[in-house]
Image (cartoon, rainbow, N blue to C red; front, top):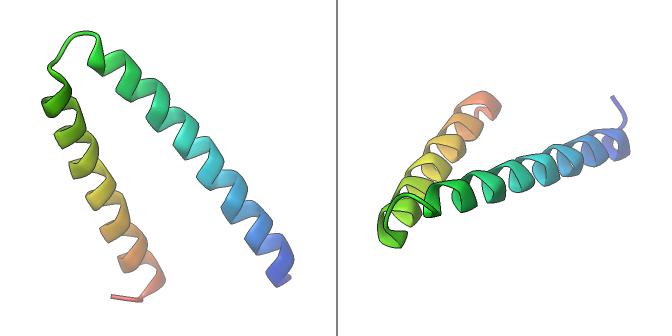
Length: 59
């Protein structure tokens, strides 16, 4: 795959994930305390980063 195409797809996926994350955190913030919502968000962000590192072999 051409590097430009790969970069475009990666950025598009990142935008979709950001929008999904933003919607979920707003939904969660309605029912749980802010600190708990931020903590859960951080936990899932860490898990996604670990999965990305494992998938790319960059660990």
